[in-house]
Image (spheres, rainbow, N blue to C red):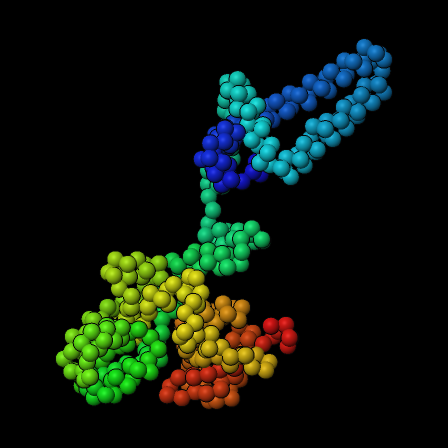
Length: 397
């Protein structure tokens, strides 16, 4: 009963005969238990009867002799037939399950009529008490249980692999809102700027793609692939860039509705052959940007060391950390092992604004989820930086 069903399925698929028989037996757990207990009780009763007969034949039918024989039989059955085998089976369930299946499977076939007859009474009693049984349901595993199994796997899985698997499981729960770069942090160029100003901004830009806005307003025109621009320069040996040539390189914007899960979005990126998406809310307002790289980093961790790291949003300080207000709560929980609420606002700034229902003044201290915060800088209707006080003694981080 304690053998791993998933291990059995793996061995059965590998061609192990004992595993195949054990799997068949466990599919009919009620009949398996019936045949085991039928044989077990028959053996115990037979042993007790046999000892009584032998004791009477050798020493007569004195009550003390029968009592001593019964006590000895009970002790031997308890030690050699009940406790010891079960302890061994609990310690080595796989070995014994595979071996015993060769005996139990034919026994079930031989005793099937008796087992069926006994089970009619058992099922009748269960029906009277309205007790429903579903042994197949017990072999199912939930996502939370799977996460616990991975987390408690010890040295079987390296820590990096554990983190990767746990991140993959969370793909259907985490939305792009939680990993996006908010629109207030996104650099862009405007087609109303001079070519010189545009090229100067591109020269100091750290990413491969930059957001392009229209001349007269903040409406998004598209996304410029900087690599395409460089290739055009090299190929044409250009000295000057015409505005029309720049516009021709701009890709149309690819919009994503807010609330889309990472799992769905990675599929959409693949289906649409896109690598960058602009997130819009229910009113059609641009609220952030997400890239394929952001999704991959959510799964495997940061890997592009040439770009400014997201970890730069968390700076160690005496008695705690200085944290960027735009950092996502999910990332903050993961990096600092906190337990801030993830239902509602997605960023630390949003959480603080919801807590105060106002823009807090610098040096304001407060507590959320038993964690002490202090506002370092707040301006332009946003909390720019916050200090989080550590509850971990210095030197233990």
